[in-house]
Image (cartoon, rainbow, N blue to C red; front, top):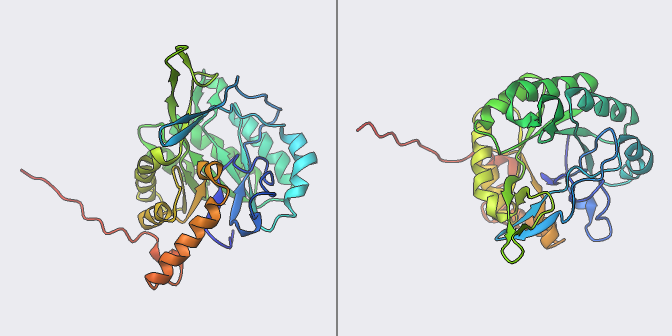
Length: 300
């Protein structure tokens, strides 16, 4: 999939794809990832669903969406009018459900790729997440891969001990690209009421607070697999992007930064161009994977 630039809007930031069209020039964005679509409509988690945190944002949306059929009939056709690439995020509560969503969307058309959100609770396996098991993650990817000829991205969770093992399992089952990563599990409490700030209790932390953590996860995955890696997590400036590209990322996603300022994508792209101009870099890809890293051993 060719993009005019390596910037993507992370899943949900532009809603179903075009929700920011009146405040962001979506034609200048490389690709947009929709919010996660499931088979049936979902109301999502109990509000409040958003809360501020130091240098970040807590969210607990709960996969709220209109469902696959309504997305196809009411929203998907509008996205073909956008001058950017569309990636549909899909979720489910069993491997079968992921496959069903992929099958219905595959026949509908109007987009370029899937991003599999494997950070959903796995009801069949007693509430664990698909992202925490190599075998289950691989099973989900394999089923989706068998239902589509489109590009398949897999969005990995950072809330695992060995993200590289999950990454390898996904690639072995047909993932074309890996998105690294998602939010970190977090919580905040109102000390006056002694209640959580989020209705669900815990949620996911995004924003600048997780940038360094996400960078380490990207580096771990880049050194473990051969497929392209899309960086996601804490990116708020051109310098942030450059760190991820130098570490080996091929593209990047911007999320919470857009909620802070709708001009964030434009500012980030301008900063990257200026850096390349000043440093005589013809293409951003020339910078990819150029980290000067020498492991220091201590044999004493």
